[in-house]
Amino acid sequence: MNAELARFKEQMYVVSLDIKDKYYERALNKINELIQIYPNRPEIYYELGKFNYNNWDNESAEKNFLKALEVDPNYFPTYTQYALILIKDKRYQEAETILNKSKKLKNKEDSDIYFYLGMLFQHQGNLDTAIEAYTQSLYYSINEAQIDSAMKFIKVCKELRGWE
Image 1: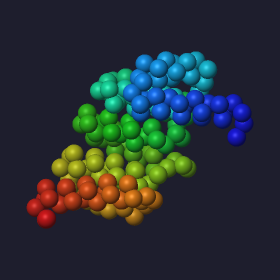
Image 2: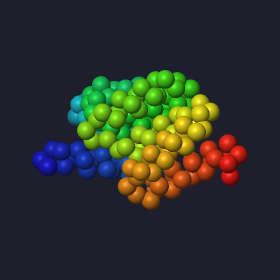
Image 3: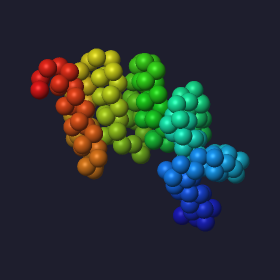
Image 4: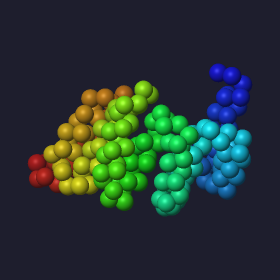
């Protein structure tokens, strides 16, 4: 890793800590500064999109996720977060398209893709298909958090179907 990339990663880590610790103004100032210095880094727009989403500004979040994808169409984390906005806005076909597109990426996380597909199908009321997608998510899970989330959502779908 070269020195400039290391410096960038360190600054992004500080931004994530500021957001976690609720120093929002400082984090936003740093993000805007980083956009000026590194306009071609998708991570910045992704973090800004997450910040917008967590502050109930889906319009700005979508704009920033789209900018992240424009800067680097291979930056995987953007796909699932953008799909979440689309699902919540009931733009199901767009969400499914973006998630299916993410399956073709080199550095993807299949567990996340299938988890969000499960969420998409669940929101549409297709509970059987949602359970299948969550089960696929389990197959690709690499940590306990992913397993726990998928199991929880499978249980909810089964309860909604009257299976448990």
